[in-house]
Length: 463
Image 1: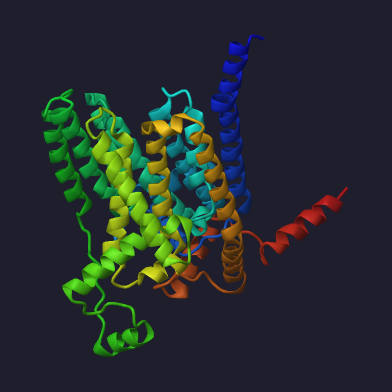
Image 2: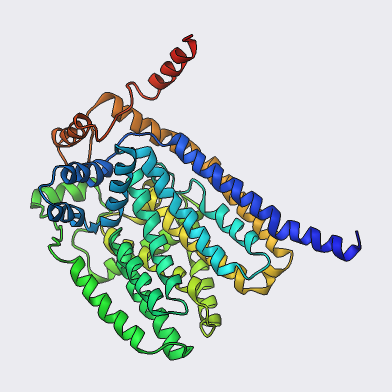
């Protein structure tokens, strides 16, 4: 084989074929891990948001009543898109299986990686870039929601729908416009923060009509009108939950949680917003050190600003808009949660917030790989090594807490009725019992999971 042909073969092997194989193995292993580890046990939001919904739809008097149940708000969210997925899975399988829902939720992460591939497919190193993104995304940093159906469907799909909407609007046509509107609606009906994507859809269309001048201004005008209509529809019958506490309850809350802001000044509130935002933004690389989180968050925000101002004149700004959407959803969480939850508590105890940071990091790294010439050299393999190190660290750091989290779920299932914060146990147990009686949910044996091992051992001894 001539030297030039051998060089081309080695380059193709390292840049395309081997990364594709490794990416496939990583994705399959991740899905296998989720399927083999997620228990078919409803937990907290699973019961109220999903199982109660299936019970009510199954016994609804009319199709309109079933639609109303699907549209009913859950806390400060509309979760109609997730409920639709749950009900379709229920119709296919014949019962609500929470292991299936966990797998279904994590498939959204693979769909996001597919969008990254679409953005990079014209680059000869596209599979290498997507492999780096996959190593940053498919790990245990947000371990609490990886194996938990309701938040997996909510947190993962709100990003997929939003990113897919932004991708659909690229080089907009009438058909793409309608598809993007559907995807934005699904994002809005997954989490409350999904409504923000309408703003980024408008930014994409304004960029194409006013800067690139490849589409008519009619598109952003129609999009703005449609956004207003859909956001008004979202608020039909919506009730803002603002619990009123007595003076005694407020005093007790202040005593037990001194960092909670009960009657803050404007300056105190802004400082809390900013600190909460920066800590959570940098939470991808740490779960304990707030100073490290702020430093890493500042670096990511600075790099994103640099990439934005450097490349906003380019035709393709899809990943830049996706990055800013991820930042905006994090900012929305900061506004909604920071007064009641100090930044250090959000970093230490609320593991799900780490996913916001991971999503910003993953999308930003993908954009930088495509834009910066330094990653067209051997530096790409250094970045791959860093991504591998991050993935290994996340498994080593969070596999212990994940096992403790699962043990707590098993113990709760084995020893008590189904506990959900804010609801009496009699009500939640009644929801599950109704589903079990009707065959809509088939619970595993108790004590779980040891009873399954005993069953397998007994079955293996039968002739």
